[in-house]
Image 1 (tube, rainbow, N blue to C red):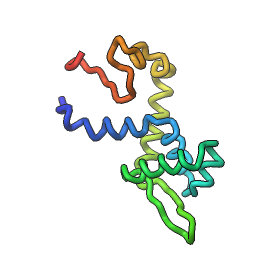
Image 2: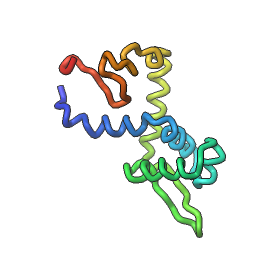
Image 3: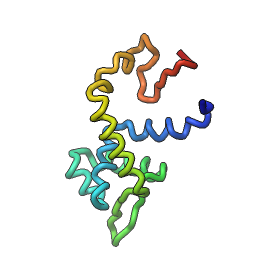
Length: 124
């Protein structure tokens, strides 16, 4: 079994991907690079919200930014993100609504009220 410290970077990555707005932004970047204004129009989020999420994704190395004149175009930094999205969709098809109906997620009595909460047999 892997030590918890070795799993920490993956937990941080999945926590970042666990934000609905950041995930929606990444999904929009699968097909083509986009400007902030494109993402604002596509997602119905404010410019500040989109810019903040893009900064987070850029700092984490998940998106790149390419200046063109006075505009900045954002794109996925790694093609593996597309593979991750595909694998996620396949997994969700297999487990169905189990994730949405998880009885321990969001339940303060279980100590699992946060997306980063992962209970294992070691810590339970």
